[in-house]
Length: 497
Picture 1 (cartoon, rainbow, N blue to C red):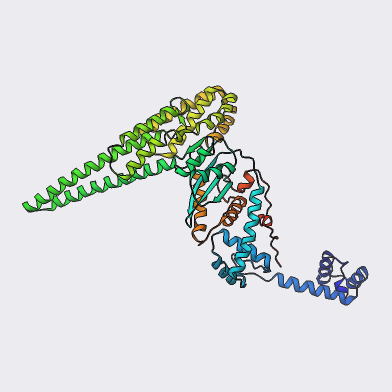
Picture 2: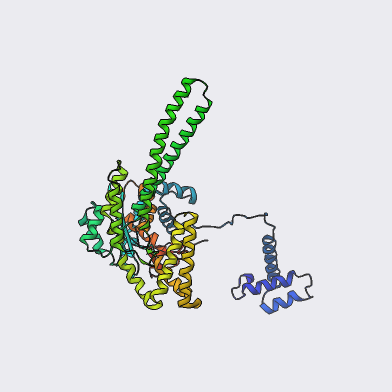
């Protein structure tokens, strides 16, 4: 048929239809079009009729407001496997995956088919993970997580959040973790919590700069400060309530009873307030050692003096009874040196800046950075805020006087790029484990394949928000990742019909 000729393009068909349908069509236009395209007049009218139907259908007014866009999806094996991987990524169990596919795609699959496809995908993910060897130009952090009675070890980059290792083992002793760390990338800085097995493994693997996590010290410390504060306020409220009852009493016996109770509550409140004040003072002494920069000198904290002060606080907790005080005392005594092992790497990182910008302006900018960091961490009394503000202004004036306003911002950005890195803990490894935990909890059985798939999917998924938004951990680590990372697992791109 003439209207199905492939040598007439869509643009030409549109021109034919618009010419025929025009109210100002010249006499003989249909005949001229038939001659021009070597078609019959009937074919010209057929093309015009088809164009009219398209226009009528396309120009029908749609409902007002936002509407769900309809799309036709072709359900084939590739789409089913991709759906299985995506549902597994968000923690859906195999049994629930079958339910989701039946409900969303009207496709019945068995749990055995799902397990078989996942096994193949997990094997391919393990191959991709093993083939990727990014250059390690960042600090690392490690953390243990237990699932189904077995320990798992995670090693992650603190800057890119790229997972360098994620392995499941049968035991968590020093030999086991030491072998895992020997196979992990070599970095000048490795942070972990105070776990004995991981600490022993880091020692056997001769990990350089094994940094202990400050968060595991400060979190229970400040948490107990809050607990003591609540107890002190509750005791003071009880005293006030008893005083109100004393004022309302009218008999001698009642007055005597309320007075005796008020005295007991006052003694208890005094004890709790005193305990809170004493412990809060110790907490502030410990927290003061967390600072990277000594505000007085503008240099790094003296690790020996700081560790000595931490031990001194631990000694002051000897007379305090309770498990929390015993734990804090033990951690302050045993972790003192390990909490400051970050200084070797940080000193090296600051050395090039000191050489480029000079010692005096760099110290002034370090002081400015620390003053701002302290203001963000804890609310300060007005008098102390005023003193710190004056010191901040003096330090900034020194930096401007030496560097000038033009070089000041370059030096400040270079310094922030160094000091804002993660130096003092393994918090980011624990954040990744918090994402892994729900997935492991939903599975009655976990193996290395499950971990390999989680590792792959985490490394290739771009961050949605934050300073890393728009890039995946693998890209931040310097690896090339396709726009559709599922093709690395042997899956074809999605096809819509």
